[in-house]
Amino acid sequence: MSYKQLQHAVWITLLILSLQSCALLEKDTVDARHKIVVSYETAQTTTGDAIFQIVKEGKDLEVLSDALSSRIRMPQDLPVVFKDLKVYNAYYNPQEKNITMDYWVIAYFANALYNMTPLSDEDLIEAVENISTFIALHETGHAFIDLLSLPALGNEEQAADEFATLQLLQTGQGDKALIAAITFFSMYYQNQNQQPGTNVIQYSDEHPLDIQRYYNIVSLIYGSNPAKYEFLVTQGLLPEARAKRSEYDYQEKTQRWNEALADYIR
Ligand SMILES: [Zn+2]
Image (cartoon, rainbow, N blue to C red; front, top):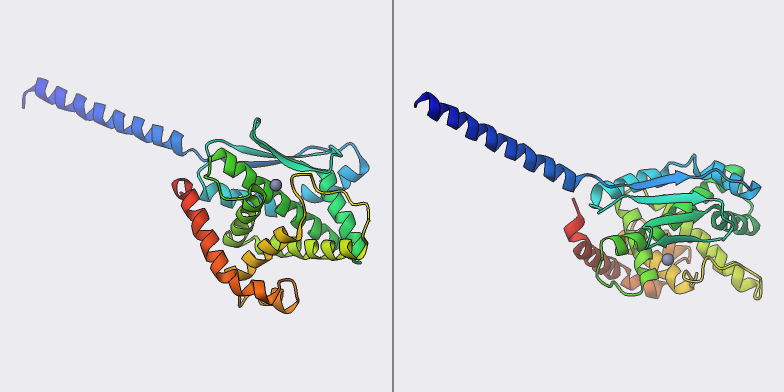
């Protein structure tokens, strides 16, 4: 090999290496991990501040968000911003591609819970964290349906619940938040039924807290592991007739979501 040939070979090798590193660089950019970014604005009101002090210390939502971000490839970051708005709502904004969590919707549920059952401060704080986590995950369901342009998965409220429930069950750390949320909702319905005409603020117009939504969630939890969650039936949180379909229902929904998310799972 002449010097010139050698020089050429070296040059080609360097070119290939640089192209490869470019390709690697590009791949890294495409695969750059977008994340769910949770933040908490300071509150101006006493009620807002009480909730702010609790949720900013909770770590469940961050842990679950990280688990989700590392399982599902996202086209961009998804901000989840807790704010002191006094609008009693939590929502995903499809134009801005972010989630707003009003401290007051959490305060409303915490208050409802406190009025229904005597709780120690510690239990109340934990309940606030768990309810907040479930609501945030439900909104994340709306966000993923939009961000990933997921095919129609039926009623979007139900789809967002399914997403939140399956993710909470499958990430392994979430069933605590789920059980707390459904136990709360169960009490909430019973209480509403006992006090017809009570003036209650609905958690947003688009999120009717109907009993059907509740049973769908409980059925999915039970269906994921009937032996582990048998208490849901024995304690009357899920009717036996419904429980018979739960396992099949869970498998079918899991498969449907896995198919819908297939292109985005890492
Ligand atoms: Zn919703």
